[in-house]
Image (cartoon, rainbow, N blue to C red; front, top):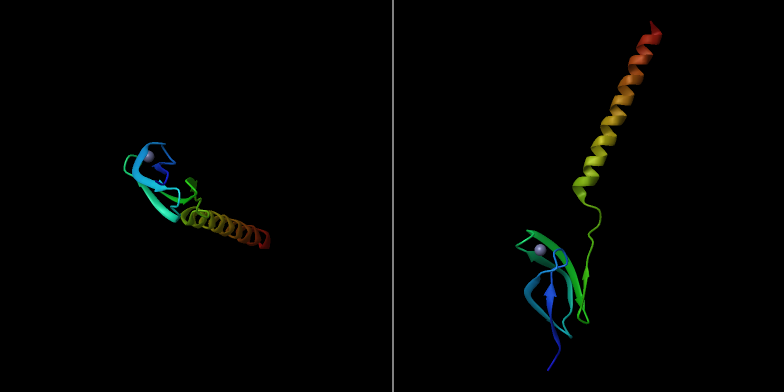
Length: 88
Ligand SMILES: [Zn+2]
């Protein structure tokens, strides 16, 4: 009989109803935890579970772009005002 192991949730460490066998291979498997209401991408190989970190979240990058964008806009507006002042 093959060795099996319960999948533990990487976030809170509680048991899931999923079991893996020693020959189970999972790739980019979204493991959902109803307790944390979170989905975690995992990888399973040789009874080992790895949490996959997704590349930097898109909304964060977008927010940064907006902050940088508005900062650049304010700087330009300030410079324009200064130019107007000095031309008087
Ligand atoms: Zn959880």
